[in-house]
Image (cartoon, rainbow, N blue to C red; front, top):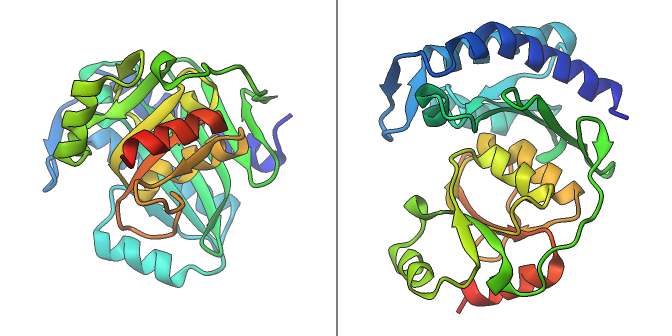
Length: 263
């Protein structure tokens, strides 16, 4: 059963999604930001709507959204010591704009620099992944239970974003094929959740931002998963600096994957 906070948060996100996103799915003009990523009017409308709703329910906690200037994001992280919402209004905007059904809304609550609450909502499948720190991970209100993973790295399905990896590592992966098969679907938040649900077995991404991983990594961790950056640091951190991420739900697979990636 979901906590009252998650239930209320899901109501906000689901309602805003039905109003702002689903009517525009695959039918919207896209613009490009300086880093060549896509932004649409739906991102901006969704971010604005969620900000108003969060402020009306939980007054006093500011919101950091993806579609904000970098300086404003950094100021919020630095100054919001009492609590901070971190929101990606559409994680997977390229998919959303193209009509590809793999995108989500991601909302996390940070306190003291730590993610304490996370929700990733996939409106196409009506799947809500959620977690509270120390309370386990849930899919549509049901605890995500441990499930069997392959025993060997060579038997796994890997979720890998090649675009942002160091070229030498990307080349080695293509040449070696250390897994059974590989996918790259284009939504970091959903990637973490599908990894938590054991739909993928191992994960690798070279550059993700706090709004990408804030909720999803908490959900994955609460499902019992293991993850670090390529440098061996913990993934979640209250910072606007992009971070790499590698992980696996099963510890033995995590060790095999880590050993391979670190040579």
